[in-house]
Each structure stands twice: as C-alpha cells, then as structure tokens.
Length: 365
Ligand SMILES: C[S@@+](CC[C@H](N)C(=O)[O-])C[C@H]1O[C@@H](n2cnc3c(N)ncnc32)[C@H](O)[C@@H]1O
Image (tube, rainbow, N blue to C red; front, side):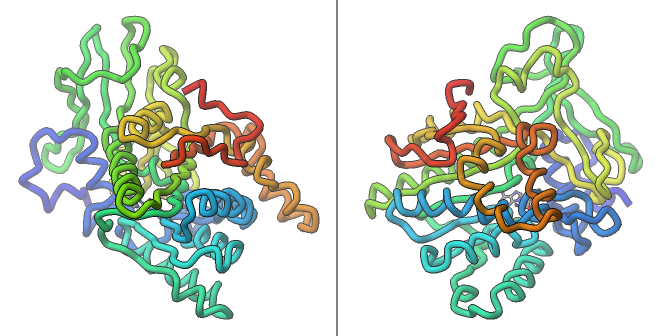
C-alpha cells in the first residue's frame, strides 16, 4: 500500500525531502517506524549492515577517540544520535566504563529505541549501574555539553533533489495520481552549493536538513560553553566526500540509493516504506554548517585511516580469524575504509584529535 493513501491532502506535488521524510519516518507507514529489523548482517532478516553491527571492534576502537574528546572538553556525557540496534552504545559503554556518567540516545525510530533497550539490557545485565546511565530523549534540551556521536545518521536525513535539464535547474518532487507515484520537476532558484561544470543533464542532492541538524548541535554546545564553561565535540561517521567530488560533473546521477534485503536499488518510489532511502554526505556542507555556527572543524579523514590511527590493529592481536575478517571490512579501501569518512567538529579551536594524526584531509573540504 502506498504511504500516501491516508494522506489525500498531500496528493499534489511534494518536494522530494517531504516524500523521503514520510517514506522513512511516517508514524504509521515509515520504514523506520515498522517493527521489522532494518540493520543486521543477515539478508533474510535485515536490509543493511553498519560498522558496529559488522564488528564490535568498531566501537572499541572509536572509544579511544571518544575518551580523548571527553577529556579535552572536560565532560563525561555522550550523546548518540540514531543509535540503530544499540550495538555502538553497548561497545562504547563497555569500553569506557566510568569515563561516561550519562549516555543519551536520541532516535526518531520508536521500534529501534525498543531494540536499543533490549541490546543494552542484555549486554549490561552484569553491570546494572552502567545500564542506569543510559537515557532516551524525545526532545533536545536547550543546551548540552559532551561528546556527540553519529554513525550513518546523516545519510538517513531527507535530502532535496535538484535536476538540471536543458540547462535549467529544477527541484524534483513526487506526485501521486491514483496511488501511482511518479517524479515531477519544477523550475527552481535552488542550486548545488558548488558550480557543476558543463551544461549536460545532471541529477544531484542538497542537504538542508543534515546541515540544519549540525547547526542545532553547534548552537547547543556553544550555548553550554558560554553559560557553563563546558562545550563539546561532534564525531560524525558516514559515507560521502567533499563538495568538489560530490558535485563532480561525471556524478550526473546523484548518490540517492535504496537498500532492502542487502540489495541496493535506485528507485525510491517503489516499495515505499519497505526499504531504506539514503544519500551520501557532502562533508564540505557539514563542515561549513559547523563553522558558520561557530564551531571549529578539527579534522576529517577516511574511516580506514581513523580506525588505524585509533589503534584498531592493537585490538586485533588476540582476535580470531573470523573476527579479524569482519574488522578488516571496516578499513579496507574497497569496502568501508575509503568511502566512509569521519569528521570531528568541536568547541576547542586547538584540539588535534588522535584519530586523525596521520592522513587528515580537512584541507580537501
Ligand atoms: C542508517 S541507521 C544507522 C543506525 C546506527 N547508527 C548504526 O550504525 O547501526 C540511521 C538511524 O538514524 C536515525 N535518525 C535519522 N534521523 C535522525 C534524527 N534527526 N535524529 C536522531 N536519529 C535520527 C534513524 O532512526 C536510524 O536509527
């Protein structure tokens, strides 16, 4: 059933980001609202795998960077956005113990919140004191301090689609004619943030929601620093590139992608609400949003470099072959090591985080 059938008021043209928001987060029909699991390693029971689910060494290794950020900011709270199955929360809490006095989880998905609770209750049953430090928030406080972590959360935020056809830029939207969804393009003043060379037909995305999200986090951290002396750091991990690569003339079909049963497809108008819709991240846009709001862009690098800098290999010394094989996926260039990036943004202008000491690429943004 189309997610639009109960929404007859929306039967006209809708911008793609509104459609994507409904497809993923509609309270009844959204992909992330349903109770089936989305994230896992098995194609029979899930749609896609993420780093903390692929290998627990992801969180164990990231913990070293989180610990340094907590120390540098003089804080002891972690804020995880889009915590998925709860795997990363469990890995960080187990690795960091008393360095964390409070672990806040913010997730739009009620069904994933239930999964997070189950994961943490099972994983922390021997340490009920650690479990009591985990809190789920439905709304953000006016200000907060600490270390913010988000793995693959930015790619789940709705994007706008822009299409250049016959030299004219259009915004792509969705129309619903008798429950038959199709794309419709309207001329627009909107433009990609980076001039796309050439005059050929071109489809791409812009990310106002993801960038507004970073601005909101920045405002809250900076307000806290101003009023309490304590600010924070943001570590965002996701697939993407800087803007010159994102808006490369040859990337003329954009980066929008759907995932279902560990298969990818390109048409978001089919099986609406049954598959994930994502786009890559323009990390230049994320860095500029943070900088415009008053944060420092401390560092940016590939996930492979980051995890090696944080000592992934030390953790693997006593690991089994199977465990090493899974951890390797996180760093090898043809899997997740190069496409995935890590960015560190903070209220600390001179902070040089350890995860970026070799191979920092901030200058490429
Ligand atoms: C691709 S999943 C990644 C889950 C998890 N971080 C992992 O690595 O397995 C995206 C997650 O982001 C959440 N999400 C999307 N937008 C969000 C927002 N604005 N605030 C908090 N969570 C959000 C979704 O509900 C979902 O849990």
